[in-house]
Image (cartoon, rainbow, N blue to C red; front, side):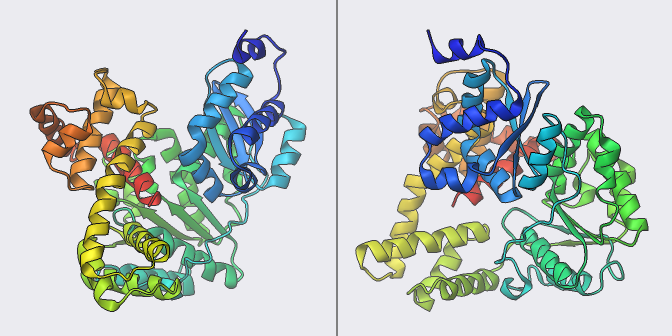
Length: 448
C-alpha cells in the first residue's frame, strides 16, 4: 500500500497538525540550513476550499517558499491529506499566528505586522542617474514631508529598476521618524483578503489599516484583474488618503496602461504624482557596478566594469548576477579578468545557464514538467507556456529562432516564429498575459 493511500484513510487532522507532519517530511528532503532558514518558523493555519494556508514571519520567506519550494510542499501536503490542494503563504508574526491557531484553524493576524525592511535598500545606497532621478527625488520628498507634497506617489517601471528599493528606503526613513508604517505586496494583500473573505472577517481586515501614517504597496499591477480586491483597495485607499496617510505605490506599468483596473481607482491613482523609472542608461549601469564591486571588495578593474555595463543592459539583478559570477570565477581559478575573458564567460554563462533558467521558470509557473513543455503535448495551457518560453528566450536571452527551435524540443522554425509573434502582438491588448510575463520575468531576474 502506498504512503498516500495509507494517509488518506486516516482520521482528518487540523491544518496545524497536517503542517507539523509535513514539516517532518520536509526536514528529510531539504538540507538543515534551508529548513532552519525558510521552514522552521512556519505554521499551518487553515485548510478550506482546496487551499492550504501557511503562515510565515515575513514577505521574503513567503516569496522564497513560493518560488523555490512550492512544488515540493504541494506534493508533501497532498501525501499527508490524500488530495491535491493549492498552497498559499501569508505573512503573520509567529506569536500572533500561534495565538490565532489556538482559537481555530484560520484567520488573519489581529494587527498589521511591523515590516522588516531590507537594510541594503536605503537612499544612501540607491544609485541615482538620469533614468531614475525624478523618482528618487520624489521618494526622498515624501519621506521627509509625508502627505504634504506628492500623495499618492506612483513609481512605475520594468522589473529590476529599483522600485522596491525606493519603497524600502522610504520605509526606513518613516520608521526613523516614528511613523506607523505598513508595507504590503499585492500578493500578500490578495492572499490575506481572500482569507478574510473565507473567514467572514473583511471588516476586521480593513480595520488593520486605520492607525497607519505611511502605506507602501508593491506590485500594484497584480490587482489588474481582481475586481473584488480592487474594490477593497479603493475603499482602503480613500480612508487612508482622507486620514492624511502618505501612500506610495510601485508597479510595473503606469495606471493608465492597466486596462482592467476600474476607472474610479485609476483616477484616484493619477491624482498624485506618477513617475517612471526609465531603462538603465550606461552611466547608471556603470555606477551600480562600481558601487557593488566596492561594496563586495571585488578585484575588477574599471575597464572590465565598463565592458560589463555595455554588455548587460536589462536590469540591476542581471548586473549583480554577472558580478557574482565573475567574482566566483576569479576566486576559483586565480585568474584575472580581461574584457576577452569576460566576453567568453558571459557568453558561456548565457548558453549554459540562461536558457535553462528561462525554460525551467516558465514550466514551474505553469505547473508543468520540462518533459511536457518540451514534448508534444498541445493542450491550451502547455501551448501558451511554450509560446511564452519562446518569447522570453528571444527577448531576454537574445537567442535566434533557430536556437529557440532546438531548445524547445527541435520544433519547426515556423511554429516558433508564429508563437513568438502571437505573444508579442497580444501583449498590447491582453493585460493578463502582460501580468503573467511580468511575474515570470521577475522570478527569472530574482534567480540570478
